[in-house]
Every structure is written in C-alpha cells, then in structure tokens.
Amino acid sequence: MLIIGHRGARALGPENTLSALRRGMACADLVEVDLRLTRDGILVAIHDATVDRTTNGTGPVKGYTIEDLTRLDAGEGEKIPTLGEVLDLVRNVTGLVVEIKEPGTEAIVVSALMEMMPKRLFLVSFYSESVATVKRLLPGTPAGLIYSEEIVDPVGLARSVQADLLLPRWDRVSHELVDEAHTAGLLVVPWLLTTEDDILEALRLGVDGFSSDDPCNARRYLDASVRQASPGGA
Image 1 (cartoon, rainbow, N blue to C red):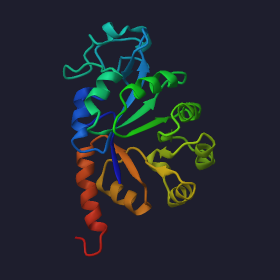
Image 2: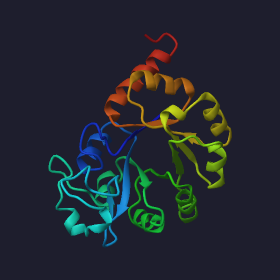
Image 3: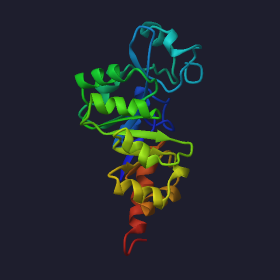
C-alpha cells in the first residue's frame, strides 16, 4: 500500500516546503505538492491562491514575482520552493504527486516535469478538465481525480477523463466504491488518513494507498496494521 506525504509532511514541517518534503521522503513512497504560477510564470509549491495563511506575506500568489515570493518566510525560515527545486530534491529518490491547482496551467506543468522527470509521478486535480488535459499531454503518466463532495458516479467521471486513480476524501470511501473502481482498472488512494484505526480500515477496504500529513507515523501504523491483519498477528 502506497503512503503519500501530504504537502510533503504537513504535520512535520511547514507545508509544501523543502523541509516538509525532506521529512516526508524519509517515510513516504511519494510526496505531494500543490502548484501555482507566479506573476512572471514560475511554478511554485503552495496550496492557497494567496500567501496569507502559510507565509508572513499577504495577497495573491499570482501578484508576486518569483524574486519577491522567495523573500517571504513560509515557516521556520523556509521559503516557498519552485517546482525546479522540488524536482531537484526528489529526483531519483522518491516519487512525486503533483496537484494542479489552476486549470490552464497543465501544459506549463507537463513541460517542466518532462525536463526533470521524477522516478515516479502522479498528476492529480480536483478539476476533471485538468485531468483530461494532462492525460492528452502525458498519456503514459498516471493521473487522478480528487474529490471531497458527493459525486453520483465518480468511477464513470474518472473513466470519462481517462484517469488512472481516484483520490476521494476518506469519508467517501466504501467497499462498493473500491470494488467498482478496481473493476474499472482504477486505483483508489484516499485522503487524509491519520490514525491507526483508519489505516487498519483502509487495509480492510482494499484501497491502494493513502495520503497522510504524518507519513512517518502512518508508516508505523501501517506496519502494525499489516501485522495485526496477518494470520497469527498480534
């Protein structure tokens, strides 16, 4: 079962920073970042459309040049990293999950990734049109549809945009969903799992992986849950 470090490892360091990514890489199979564009067209790792919540600055990300953006403190003295810096860090070490936050940036994201492809890559988005676009641009790379609200037919929607995986919020996962997705050839990778009970339930449901803010605790919980679920386990 895959473990994905959410925003690097948000519980262990300032989210989407190189520090959080390093901590996530110690335990996760893949680490995840969110991408947005600066005013001068540079891809940076930040979740929100503004810098207010995660830095000592204010205003929209797209209002900053990369030079101005990198002067901000993203927590513990960390800076908002560029996608290039993220790729330098993870390449040949850990897989990368890239969440496309802004529809219309898909070609820029794919072009940047092709110059420095990580060892394993998932491209994901809440926007079905973004998933469809990245599959056209990079058909050999797994792409996934994220969702939190109820969707009448998430498997059908995922298949319609050529997705390879579903990333539902944890409370949207059921045996029926997992079975239907697997029948359709889709992986199921929910978010965010935090407790040992969650991970034991994920094993029972047969999901293929999950995201966690603390991938190191998640790794310990997963190992313990596997032992518990195994015949003769404690």
